[in-house]
Each structure stands twice: as structure tokens, then as C-alpha cells.
Image 1: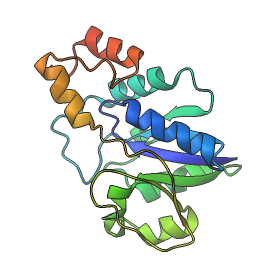
Image 2: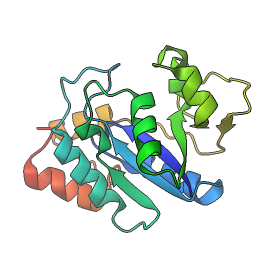
Image 3: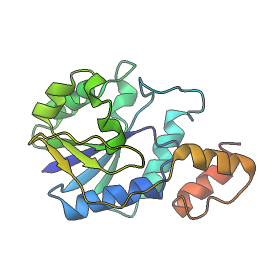
Image 4: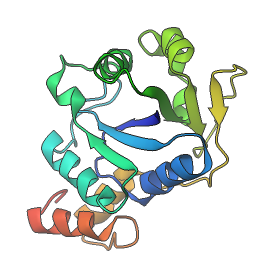
Length: 188
């Protein structure tokens, strides 16, 4: 089975993530999309990062009604910081029956060459790239597939600020995720 791996902090997961994953699963040859919740991105600050189990639970809530989506906590059990190439190798070793592809935003393609073993990721796994606001670098490579998807300019940073200010994030989040955030008083 061909599976797209959508890595992220998901702090929190929002409708932009869900729309992109749905398009990838529905309009490409990907049979499933797995949301790989990253405990800590080596290239980002962890200052405003919720506990990994809260972020995983929000992903589970957001995708509960989609049988071709799966929440994955594999990086919770790996050495930190976790690097994409190590996670891909681990998942491939544990799931030899699957063929994995990496899903990234066009903005990440701008600095993909700085990732640990980026050329090996490209060669062994390939990339499915969706458009992001700002400058999206184009790479001509047979292992890079560009996805025709809407340009969704929603950021988790904006959502966290919205929640902290007491404003509504109703249409930015899955209703169950919003309820979870309210019940646990997160991002306040």
C-alpha cells in the first residue's frame, strides 16, 4: 500500500492540514495518509509547543471519522531530536509491505536541502509537495510530485494567538479538537 506521511507538530491540527491530507488521499495514488506527530522539530523552537500527547490526541480527534487517515506516534519512542530520515527508515523496517512517500509544503522545499540525508529521502521515498503561501521553490526531479491543491493560509501560530485572545477559532479547527482545547484550557 502506498502511504503518504504528513509530519508535523500539529500544534494544533487545523482544517488546513485536513484539507491537504484529504486532497492527497483522494486525488493522488496515495491510499492512506498517516499524520506523524513530531515531539520536536529540530528546526523550530519548542517554546509554545503543547505536550506531545495532547497534540496526538487532537490529531486522533480530528481524523476519527476518516478511515484512510491514521495518527502515528512513532517519533515519541525514538531518540531526540528526531530526523525525518530516521523515522522513514524505522517505518520502512517495521512495515515492509508499505511504500512510503513524504508530504511537505512548498515552503519546506525551500530548505529541504538542509535536512539530514535529504538526497536519500528524495531518492528512496520521494516527495508530494503541496502549495503554501509565500515563495515555493520548484525542483525538477522525477521523485517530486507537485499537488494541485488550494493555497491555504492558515497557521497554527495564528490559531494559538486567536485562542489566547479569547476570539473564536470555530471554523479553523475540527469541532472535537476545539472542544478538547476548551475543556483542557489549552493555549491560554
